[in-house]
Image (cartoon, rainbow, N blue to C red; front, side):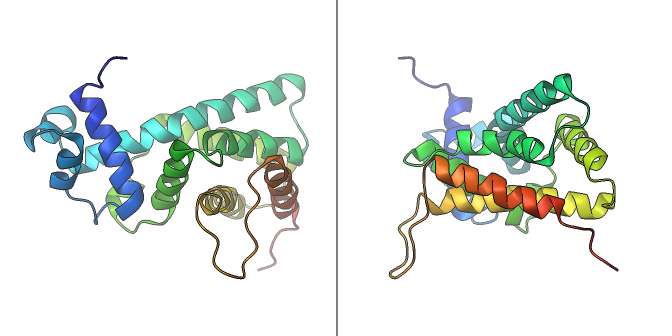
Length: 209
């Protein structure tokens, strides 16, 4: 098995530390120490800590987005207006696939996605590019066709809710439950429950203003 190159080692270390400590809680020195690289390597391979954060986020999120787009393509090839439940399944399924229970990589991915959603650092929110924007627009358009009563703003709020609920659920399956709490379900049942719950949330009537 080939030894990872320096760039990959830095990405692996940064992904681990960003997921554990957030953007501001992680120093370049800590990343290079864990990667076994020198401080200049981050600048050489990525340009800055912010660009390193962007590279980490894209490495984690792009395979999920690709699977989500493939699922959407499959649905739209069959009908231009698929049921909401099928759209939710196409959106949620890859998140469960990439964050399986009992897997260290899945645990790290779920922590990193929660970090991306919640970290206050501007650098964490500014990593997206045209590919991510196109992906969001495609799902927004698909949901808008079958949920025409929702404003674009409320629809996007609900889509962010899908991400948040799924990421938090996947994060919890990797953590020890608090005493007296029900342990989260790790198998296929959790996926079915998520689709049922999120389909109902997406299909709820528009909020009155």
